[in-house]
Length: 275
Image 1 (spheres, rainbow, N blue to C red):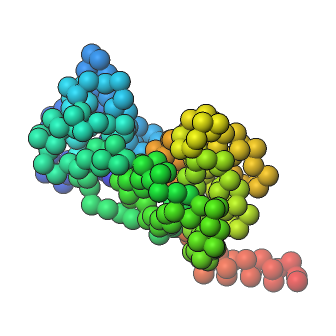
Image 2 (cartoon, helix red, strand yellow):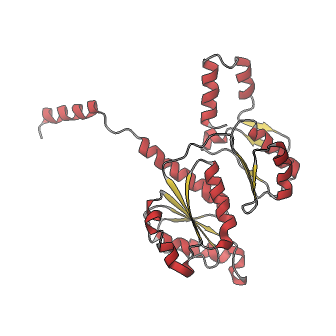
Image 3 (cartoon, helix red, strand yellow):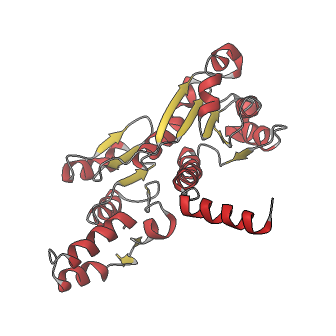
């Protein structure tokens, strides 16, 4: 349950549009719902600003469908990662509005209208082979109502492609940089911008890349300050971190400045004590 959904329920209760018993019935499901094989965390959106997301890998299609249905019943957007096409089938039949994203292996259902952030998350991807990880990040960000700008296939083998976007990258509030092979791109990007850079190593590469370990170690050993690193192929984790950072910026822009009365009071104090 997201804060807005709880607010809507309380407002409807106060307006007499919802009976007390009906509201109580909904509140009884919080903070979690025990399904036997899973405890669905309905309060995560309230606590963390981001609702629970289903990790599909290792679950049966029936388990994914059941958890998906319980999350969807709350009226929130629903996201499942690492989902195969076969696993997505039952959910797509039950929810025609749901979408399966084949490249990213994600299953999503948007039920809330977008409330896009003013700040932009820049998503930089080194090569086309890294796109599945980048797409996992992009789709996650969009379901979290983040404004996203993508810069794909701009790896260090052709640095001019990246530099063509330098001004736009500098305007982003936070950047996600996805790269495999030697994993150099996040260090290069961090040397061009004054915003946080979240590096995502991918498992793309030949033998000595060791399934992304070479890129991971390269990013962890970056000489550029301001770079944080998530796990190999973890576009979802990078998106969550970027969304939290971007929302902090939203709160800062919403902070009220000094009111005219505050300014007048300060001026009076100055007159009392002298310049």
